[in-house]
Amino acid sequence: MSCDIYHLLNDILDDVRVEYVQAFYLVLAYLCYVTALDYPPFFAYLEKLLSIPASLIDPKIVDLNNLNYDGWLVVVYQRTTVILTELVLGIVLLKYVHSMLPFSAS
Image (cartoon, rainbow, N blue to C red):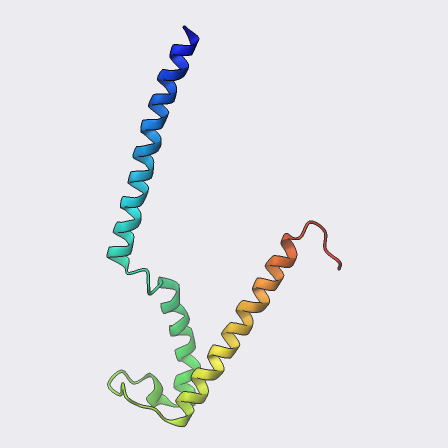
């Protein structure tokens, strides 16, 4: 008798798992369609933060009506911010990996 209950519960759980996985993929597909995850929301905040010093360096950098502006300050500023943000990302990643080690050498 208990074996029948086990199989019944197992069948119910299999159905729940299948429905859960289907629902998960439907939500994921909806999010990808609606929010366009190729442009994450926090990247917009990073751009806004980086536009503050950019406007001090050269106000034409942040002028939306001046899309083809390619002054040398733009190139220098963009390359510098890419290098600095990659360095920050690398340092944070190294600290995270170091903190995940079972015992650290510090």
